[in-house]
Amino acid sequence: MAQTVVILGAAGRDFHNFNLCFREDPAYRVIAFTAAQIPDIAGRRYPPELAGPGYPDGIPIFAEAELDELLRHEQVELAVLAYSDLAYPEVLHLAARANAAGAAFLLLAPRQTMLQSRRPVIAVTAVRTGCGKSPTTRHICALLQAAGRRPVVVRHPMPYGNLSRQVLQRFAKPADFADDDLTIEEREEYEPLVEAGITVFAGVDYRRILAAAEAEAEVLVWDGGNNDTPFFVPDLHLVLLDPLRPGDETGFWPGETNLRLADIAIIGKVDSAPQEAVARLRTAVAACNPRAALVLAESAVSVSAPERIRGRRVLVVEDGPTLTHGGLPHGAGYLAARRHGAAQVVDPRGCAVGALAEVYRRYPHIGPVLPALGYSPQQIRDLAASIERCDCDLVLFATPARLTRLLSCRTPLLRVTYAYRDHGTPTLAALLRERLPQLFTGKQEIR
Image (cartoon, rainbow, N blue to C red; front, side, top):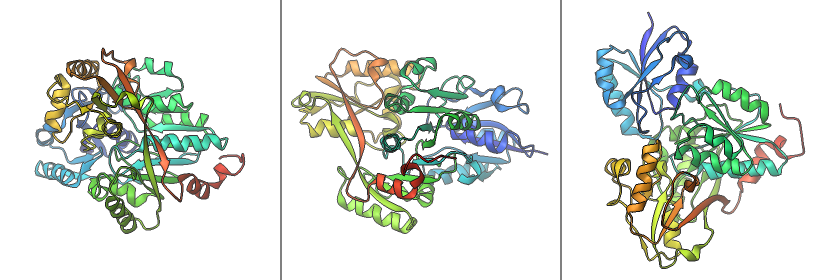
């Protein structure tokens, strides 16, 4: 008889693990997914056309709060954890809940969930959300383009909309964004790459996504989500560490796994972090993974017209996930406001409405900044309304997405951007040339 399974997820890794390890295995019967971290995922179904012939009705998705009752009522035998950026105590609390309800608790090994590509794969991962994966990915793509290569980025899944339509997503030009009702969170990841001439693939079924990406690319760059492990076997694995959160590199699932697997460890944000924190991360890398090459990097924050900030009352809008499950109180926008002489960083917490007000209740560590939450049209409206309620002279947008395409604002706007920059030697470019010479020494044929 098949073993009954519930997969604990957050609309991404959970579907991937099901597709690779459970969908076609008669030894298992997945009766449900649970959802956490991402709003408005629970209550949907993984559709039957994706779940396969063994699941003609699809698979329901429940809120993680219902886990204990679900396991007991359905006499579930196995609970599989399949989402990321969880502190170790949270992982074991979930294990205790599963065990108490009668289910075994499973963490799949990364290699069990990786697909093998016929193209070279460079994987960019991290030990926490918000370490700087996206600007690092863009920097790697620029280096590959300069070497005459044709990179394609495959992004960790963010299937927050119609799953049947999001099986395989391809974004090559800005007009492509209009076809999928993308969330702010998706736009933050896709827009800067597409604007730099890089095609991006994402979606639900990564076997199909891999085949489509391989048909276009000479090199695949895996752009990870949260602190999750790659979906493809990497030829070179990079991991980002954040000196603003020292200690987290060995305290969160599965970030420490990435650190132990990595070929290159990048300590970012060294231009804005205490040097003792950078030294602490050096020690952690040497202890966990002494074979990894170490790179120091900066997050180069820039503003097109910094003089507009000086002496102004500034509302800062930051990247959402970095603040929420990433655990940071603020990000690049707050840094830019302080660096360029804002008279006041306006505290939006008393002005937030709807979903934004709930975010502050759920994540009390967030400082006097507004997270760019936008997983649904209502949340985008709540974000716009929260901005309008703030009495300020200037709104500073520090999210990679061009939010002005999604919402209007009566207050003047200014955008903050941030990019990867080496801090001393070795440079990331030098290590890429050393580790993957076939990509950078002449126009050689790629397998």
